[in-house]
Amino acid sequence: MTEPDLRALIRDIPDFPAAGILFKDITPLLLDHTAVRHAVEKLAEWARPREVDYVVAAEARGFILGAALALELDAGFVPARKPGKLPSETVSAEYILEYGVDALEMHADALADGARVLIHDDLLATGGTAAALCELVQQLGGEVVGCAFLVELAFLGGRERLAGYDVHALLTYDGE
Image (cartoon, rainbow, N blue to C red):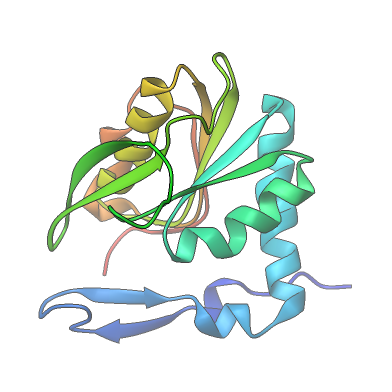
């Protein structure tokens, strides 16, 4: 069986969510169950040697593959959400997006001290979201053992912002 062409299933949406941004839309990929399975398996193949206890993913697109990745790794899943969306005590980290400022929160009791954590999001752009996730994990005493993405926009320098972490992306775009 041939592997699905993941790149062909990601479409460009110009000027979304703001003028000048070229949005990488993964929804066509999500329509293809074979492509989703392939993406999750490839991410898990990279992550498995890292002996992951938990996958931490950002709201909202990170949840889609993040939960599936956690299942594939026999790991727990920890959602990082926008402020005010979690019902119990939280820890928070702010970050700068390529088009604004935002914050993420996790439950304060989500990770055991020393937990081995894989950070996941659908896309690595400037690295702000992933860096905030790493900060949250460290606040709770966890160890970030890797950062795994479906897509990396290398021209935005996110990998450099995550210097010191093991970073992997299934697809890399070197230019818009």
